[in-house]
Length: 253
Image (cartoon, rainbow, N blue to C red; front, side, top):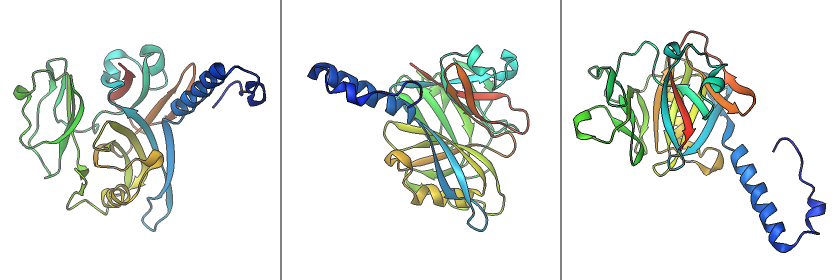
């Protein structure tokens, strides 16, 4: 926790009901502060350690929002001022990609044919957030859809490690992780390969007991970034090294 430290010595003089309320408030505050986590994992080509940054969220309590940074004439440093309800943000899609972006019943960018066998989409409808493979996905079959973005590849899908993940290219990477239930995580990893990161996510239980069921890459390379709001203070930001346009934000429902 940050700010004023609780005086536990004084709590023993409170009535039982107030002691319980104070304890619940402290626990809730700790839970909120624990949404942003980091974990040391062997990302390097020779097993060197790197920091995996994570932001956990529940899709019953928050929703996804796509922001066009260039259209809003804003930057990641000023994102909190223009979108005050944002909790965290990450790349929406690989900067050079031309795959589907669908928002509020409008196709901003059309589908592109799959170039790999493990490309996918994340999408949001009235039931929540979903991950699916590109093959067979049809906009017409999802009338309550309000957001869909084509990206990839999948490193894990439904608990299975994707085949033929590249092991030679080491780059910064951002991902959307899912435990198969209601818990999700935005993730940023320093330079590593798809094969190495896939194995790490398959074999490792992350902080908060999170076990990755599916992992979809959002971006790789110099455009990758990771942003978490710290309220009125400066946000936590792992900055992109090259310009980025579409931002995937998390905000409360």
